Length: 273
Image 1 (cartoon, one colour):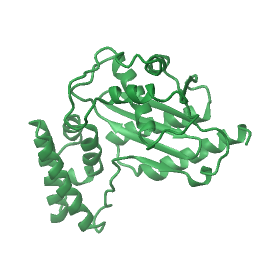
Image 2 (cartoon, helix red, strand yellow):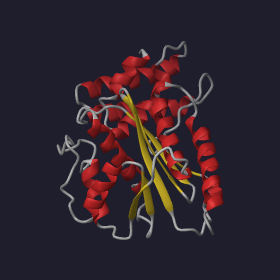
Image 3 (cartoon, one colour):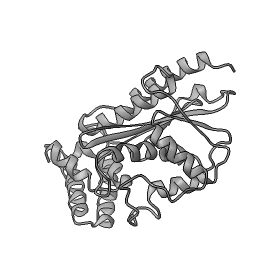
């Protein structure tokens, strides 16, 4: 399967399946290894099932591919890991006593996108995104994914930390978050589809709006993009890294970990503890 064919097929998958298929991308390439070929066949069949809206079958085929990949090991190529969550933590910042501050961001170029977040206690996340069939085009697509990045951050917690401040460089996204926090949970960006999702009980932004409306201690603030703010630059870099991962093959985890550590070092050097 050519890289462009794989990317177009990925666009058909809902986010959870999208991430799982992306982690198995290496097996979709031509190979002389019979085991890798079988894994690749399962991935390609999953993408074909998604083309016909058979997402249950696609999930089962990805289950089979992941099980075969785990059993195959890394003898002939690196064993893909399950990066469905795409989250990590730089442990040395876990003991910070300063108030928690996070930043989120999104990146789009062509049909490839990425979202990312970083928290001052070392937590971070990045996730690649394709163009979904329910996504609008143009300006609204960028806005919606800025908000999805906030959902990606907040969904990392069973309970959102009290007093958390979230920084965004998108004023439009910030306005929606403030409206939702004020109780206007029905307000949605233009073109955002409220159709039921097969893979989730609620559309992402509907879930986010309801969550934000129940979090009076959660603060959202604007930060100017590309102004040298360490947390914003980290989130921006993570979202770009996630976007590039769709079209390039590289080990994202060590790069993300080192990047977050460097930016957090800068951040904590300027914050009183």
